[in-house]
Image 1 (cartoon, one colour):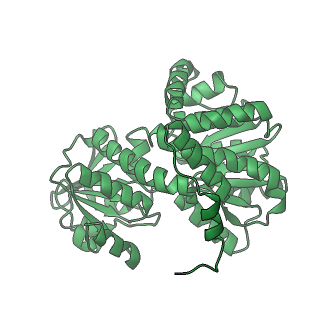
Image 2 (tube, helix red, strand yellow; image 1 turned 90 degrees about the horizontal axis):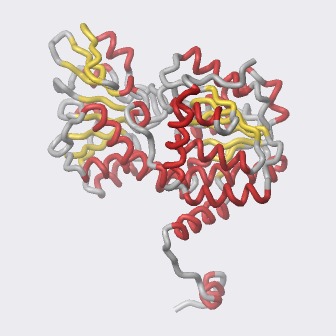
Image 3 (cartoon, one colour; image 1 turned 180 degrees about the vertical axis):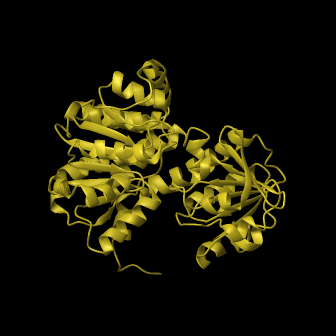
Amino acid sequence: MKNYDVANLALAEEGERRIEWAAKEMPVLSLIGERFARERPLTGVRIAACLHVTAETANLMKALQAGGAELALCASNPLSTQDDVAAALVVQHGISVFARRGEDNETYYRHIRSALAFEPQITMDDGADLVSMLHQERQDLLSRVRGGTEETTTGVIRLRAMAARGVLRYPIIAVNDAQTKHLFDNRYGTGQSTIDGILRATNVLLAGKTFVVAGYGWCGRGIAMRARGMGAKVIVTEVDPIRALEAVMDGYRVMPMLEAAAVGDIFVTATGDINVLDRAHFERMKDGAILANSGHFNVEINVRALEEMAVAIREMRPSVRVYKLADGRELALLGEGRLVNLAAAEGHPSSVMDMSFANQALSVQHLVQEGHKLPPQVYPVPDDIDRAVAALKLHSLGVRCDELTAEQQRYLSSWELGT
């Protein structure tokens, strides 16, 4: 059986150049890869990864391979694969890759099954589809798995639900929750790349537009911040009163989505929940409103309802599908309602993925060494890993920070001294 399924192997040289370019902005992962090559801590460990197949992910795969790991990689989203990168990983690096940009659902899940056929000892997931399928269809493999990592908010939510119901069978580290991941990747990476995707798809001017952000988690914060920075008037919608209050204190208007639907020009969902934009909202929207999703799965915008309401559907530009409604209004959906930053652009900048994937690599090493001691639960990234990644990033930027003196350390660990 062929140990890969990619679109075109002839793209390998182009993909290798893209991987090399991304590596220039990923010094922390490069340092980890160099250490892995010396120490070989992952020798013989089989890893199945379900991630966005991008140049940044390719550099993670190279670091793991340098550590001795054997790898199988499949896509975590049908529209996120960079076909030239997939080809380069197969041709230049001998990694089994199962990913094609634009693959249909049947192919998407077949590719996950192909990665699981690798009989992994470690899983790496971005959305928990691989872990879910492993627990539902390939329970015969579960006894061999030492642990796994999860990259996204959506995936962590799913995995915690599995753990709460007692069905999770091995320990998983929530890389998404590392401070060096969500503070930077989710906020700065998602903020910039979401705006990038919207602009590449539409070429609209954001200045003066009313820009509605659904959800004020770390991703929503980043999107709102970047939209405001380009001159948009930003509205935030939330269900959590604490986050809603934070958005108000940050200077944004906050209102229910039903109210925002009537005034918004551009809508972006970033909640991890279903039908955040629904039929009732479409009925109130302006002619020409633009709809985009920055959450992991394509469920946040109710595309089926939009299709049922439409009397005509046209592809106006790459990644732009316009739905004409019975009253003549037109609503533009970007990237089929999938992750707009990957469907219409290139995803997060390499510099922020450097920290996220450094956490991934070091968490994998931790699981290889310690996973057998951990009960099946969702765990945070160990604090020493999180801080090591931050320290390496500062070092790569030429930035130094203070260290506590012995006196200060004693004071912080004591209780006797007061005013």
